[in-house]
Structure formats: C-alpha cells, structure tokens
Length: 370
Ligand code: OSB
Ligand code: MG
Image 1 (cartoon, rainbow, N blue to C red):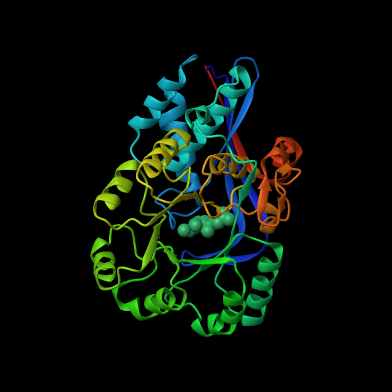
Image 2: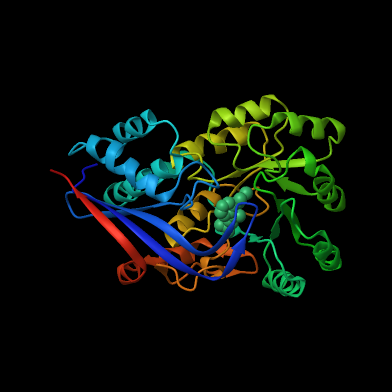
C-alpha cells in the first residue's frame, strides 16, 4: 500500500440531545477522521472513536493526532505491505483507537484496489440483517425517561441497555419496570466501571431485580471486588467492555472463570485484525460476543456493522442508526433499521459526503509524503 497524503480531520457533530453516563455529560460528538490517499488517488477513511477526554480509555483526540504525527506517519514508507503497517502499529504500546483508525483507512484503500478484506478470514456467511439495540443514558426527569423507553420499545430495538452509576435514580426504574417486564425486549445495564466497594447495595438492586447482564460494573482490573461478588452470587452475569483491550485481557478473564460475555469494540482492541482474533477465541470457547459502539459517525458505524454481520449468534449489538443521536451524519443516506434489524444490503448506498465533512470540520491537517 502506497501513501501520498494522510489527512487528519477533526469534526464536531451536534447531537439531538444530551447524553449522560457514568463517564460524563455530552452535548456533541467530537470525532477524528483519518483520510488515507494512495499514489493513485484512492482514498480510504478511518474513524478514531475515542473520546475527546481520557475518561473512557486513556486515549483522547488531541493525543491521537500527536501519535499519528510523531510515531506513525514519519515511519510510513512510500510503499509497504499491510503486514509492514501492522508491525509498525504493533510496536506502539496502547493507543488502540488511534491504531484502529489508521488500519481502517488503510484497509479501505486496499479493498478498493484489490477487493481483498480481512473479513474473508471469517469463514461463516455474513448475516443479511443485523440485530441492534439502543444504549440509553442516565435521566434526571422520569417523564422524559418514560417517553424514551416507550419510544425505544415501539421502534423495535432488540435490546435496551441502560447506563447506571452509583447516583442512578432507582425510583425512576421502579416506575418504568412494569413497562420493561411487560415487553419481551432484552434489558441490560452498563455502569462504565463506576461502582466501587461501597456501592454494592445499588449494584445488587440491579443484579437481583432484572437477573440480566451487567456491563463493566467495576473499574477495570478490580478482580477483588468482582471475584467476591461472583463467589457470593455465581448467578450474576458480567459483560466486559473497558476491561478488555487485547486478546491477553480476554484470555486472563476467561482463565479466571469470570468471563460471561464480551462487548467487543473494534477501536478499543486496536482494529479489525485484533477483533478477528478475539471473535475466533470467543467462538472456540463458546463465549458470547457482540459489537459495541462509541457513537461513531457512519464511517465507524458501517465497519462495526460489517463486523457484527459475522457474529450469527449475537442477541444484539450497540449499533443503533446514528440518526438516533446525530442531527446529521457525514455519511448519507443514513443506515436504515427496521424493527431492530439493519439491512446490510442498504449499507452499500451509505456514502461519505465530502461537503458534510467540510460543514462539520473544526480543523484539519494534511501530512504529505516528502
Ligand atoms: O460503554 O458502551 C459504552 C459510548 C461511548 C463510550 C462508552 C460506551 C458508549 C455506548 C455507545 O454505550 C453505544 C452506541 O454507540 O450506540
Ligand atoms: Mg460499555
């Protein structure tokens, strides 16, 4: 793969409404897009879906830009194999979201030029319709929350995932429970690592009331709290998000007997190749695995959906169409969902709109090969 220009584009996309989680409050999505242009003018796009602050992972957008500037682009050769690029990226410790974005851009160029993609390594036939769920924030107004839940149930999402934290309003859930128990939609919870040793009462409220999946209840690496909870209540079902950044993290949890389910984010584990390794390990060991989201633009969303289409047994992925959270996406037409299913055929029409990229660009920088 050759390279002529790498363009780093920083966007700010307005959201339809504020989103609150155990991580923080967000009114708009700052995004970083990496455009890779080869010698023939073929362009590939990657999305770095870390947050602008280091509150989900230790990466943040300004840091990602510095990494690409200092430790990736200067080491690119005029021509390299995809394997050379992976070696260059592997040498860098951490920075998974950033490395994934570079890999994604390169893969798009390669696919356009040769028709080859690493998805061919996954032997199963991809699904034509991918089941998706919705991730709902923390609410400060119970009427608003009721409306949102009612609407999500009517829309047909295959799963409702509620953000929870030690400050969550349990009384709101008490009011909404009849609606949740009546519906046959799967309900799960995500604490984003916000519970500590002193929040076990509220943790157990959610575990007992719903006997469902809880995502990343405790801070990553707090095996002490986890194993205590698991020993006392083996029925508690844990899904990991932040905790798993590599296949090694996954294997460790599996060997410790603490792994029930995996939220796999392509960016968090460092890209498509790393994700495929994880998918294969999960398949071999019967570990349920689904694709998580970071409120990406259509660029990242499309790739995630493609990955999800190779997981035939997943209940639902965190990949609701982006018009749920953005006023306008830079990919148009938007991904289409019908009754909780995304039609993969319809993704073929979803096209990156350069004029919309321009409209939402805060700043950009082009690194030209010298
Ligand atoms: O914990 O899964 C999470 C978004 C940003 C950071 C962390 C998380 C999320 C989501 C997004 O839940 C779900 C989506 O993209 O639809
Ligand atoms: Mg999560």
